[in-house]
Amino acid sequence: MPNLSLLLGLAAAAGVLAWSLFQPGATTIFDMHGLVIVIGGAAAAMLISTPAGHLFSALRTFLWTLIPGKLPSADEVTGELLRLSRKARAEGGLLALRDESPDFAGGFLKRALSAAQSSGETAAARDIIELEIKRRRVQRTEDANVFRTLGLLAPMFGLLGTLIGMLRVLQSMTEPTKLGPAMALALSSAFIGIALANFLCVPIAGQIRLLSMRETQMLEMILEGVLEIAANRPTYIVQLKLEAFMGRPAAAAAGDRG
Image (cartoon, rainbow, N blue to C red; front, side, top):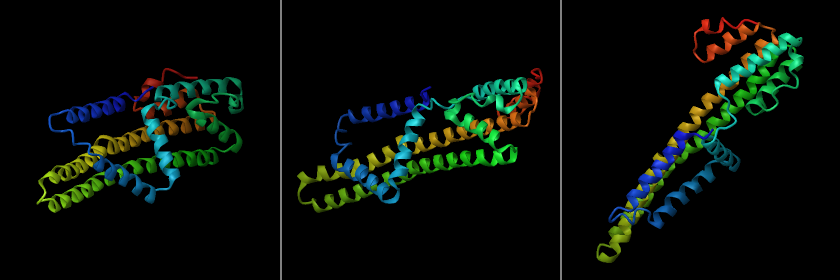
């Protein structure tokens, strides 16, 4: 399902910028020199400071924030795990689930079941599965940091463009015809840098952080559910454990005992 709040926010930001561009006297807001200094400078700085693999990962995560389609909801996770719990208890245990849910949560549920089946110990299975959760969380944090860093760099390069424009202004005091382009560079650079940071980079970093928290909660729900199934807990106990993740009253699960 598309991330409607993010898409609407990007559309609103584009609308604000377009409106400001078409105001009388605002045609120099997007001065080409300012665009090159801010966007080109920030891109060069990111290439210097960040490996290309991390930049591509951040780009993929940005696309993931737009359409996080492979991320199931807490209710979907609960429903799937309860179904597996009932099947395991009815058909002889964890091995009955070896062909179940191959694509759920991007294959994470299948990997968690395989780890529990292979290890034979819930502690060992927990260690194995938690390593993947930790790796994903660290990767998302690094992806968010790419956009946070870009959000810091863009205004700095905007300031650099402003300084260059002001130098040109001072050099052109005796030539009034050159004052306009110099001032355009100075003001355009600051505008572009601030707009890029506040309309795109900082909000995207926040979106990645929030979606990463949701993803971590979903993965931890799957982990706990699989371990409860591996321990042959009754289905209602599995449900109680999963309901705790969603902050629902424990009594709500008491009616489903199996």
